[in-house]
Image 1 (tube, rainbow, N blue to C red):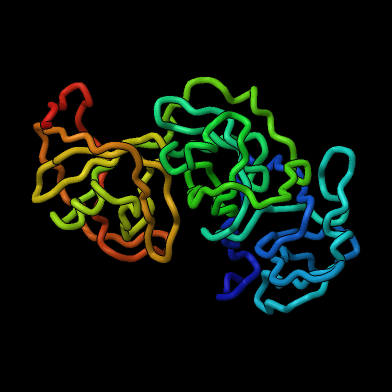
Image 2: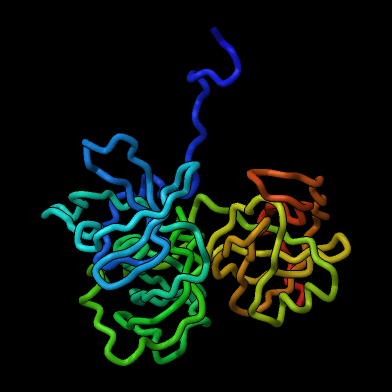
Length: 305
């Protein structure tokens, strides 16, 4: 009783599953690598989530997400079969494996004060994603315009999708092949996600200059900061806050996160000298945490231009 290795060990929560708020995404209309499915066959002895790793004519290969990681061949029509309610008949779709390079499409539904709201049907056809409008070609910024972009379709929140690399769709693109989006339902004014915060990034002078003028953003190690599109990223150089740029989104990367910046540079001065956090390791992410959250009131900032 109670010996090591007993069956009473609590299983670990599987990473990468969609958050409860976006589990109602319709079943996919096409099979793509990175998609994850759970079999619904009651006769299966050991049902386990599978991840598509290769597609072909009428079928695909998927890797079982268990210790054996065995490759199995699946029928594409059976994978995609869905009922009138949009749910899978033979398999339940559980999202994509986290990866930043998925090529996908999104529809622009609103542009307000330098921010654009888009819907990406392959991630969720009804949950809006906010990005900096400057990253979208001017000709494609109108409501109802479709764009091709890259995204992390395995993100569990809109801010984590990191939509980027916006271009016009290829000739022959047909939006009807995707799940429909409701453009008119997302026209209200764009605001930052109330669950996220403004962050302070500790940078060298050279890195700060690149973050002010460039579009690559800032890579931070350690666990991901609680920041999303529409928030502010303040730059702290030699202990002093020098200003901020808007956050266009975040991209998960190995052992860290890239915070993508957009919009103009706003030089400000504050009466607080942010404290550099201690080194930390969290959730498999390594490295010193060179960021913290804003602790002062925005009303107390002074324009340093």
